[in-house]
Image (cartoon, rainbow, N blue to C red; front, side, top):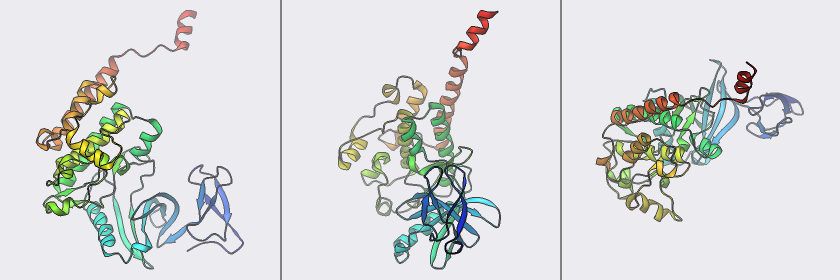
Length: 335
């Protein structure tokens, strides 16, 4: 661990404003103090083997994810430290291992890549590809709704990722906006395979955890065996939320919310927002059918429908005349 000499200063870079500033060398590793320029918390780096942990990206039930530098390969990575209080929890350890193994078995552009899983001085950690440009959840919070073309692109790419997982007999089981992150190129990355299970797992183990109530499939609520169509439904809910700014179903209590997935008719997206194209709206309505057999019966069918909607939207946008700017009007008048 490198903390600097007691009473000395250490130069670090603020991850928020990218300014190099000095912080107190007395800070313990992972402790923070405000950036002198922007006020964002700056962390005292922690050296974990060749990985220098430089700042917090996110925290969850299993642990904290840090932005880090692989000093050997000189590349930026993300390091997930498991909470120390969970190290003696056999089930928590198994979940942590499961996430590492599930992700590591899948090689897809839109699934977060796992680099290594290790232990150092009793600390379990997972090193993975860095995707620190926010989640789809934060994008919805900031923008209220995401542009239709972007939603279609995300749907096409994440469905392709889920299709690869299915070919490896894996169900993700927790598709939601918070589990779709973006990298520096704004490419969507599917993360958090902590609830992933084999497609041939027994129904009782599959239904131990519903996932997130806003995005859960009706068959899971009814304790029926879930399939890839359950992941597809959850992806549909996620895309619906991003497209309209509203979740497909809402209710005052969790019980009423999950009941709505089973019993309440879906409001088509273009009835929520008339500017949404009919083709996109129809595709999402089919994905969110109550009966799994009424959804697209493969991810290929899903992508074909979304690619058709995307193509039609691009044609529509290209044929719409661009609004004439005041500058162009002035130039015409001066001629």
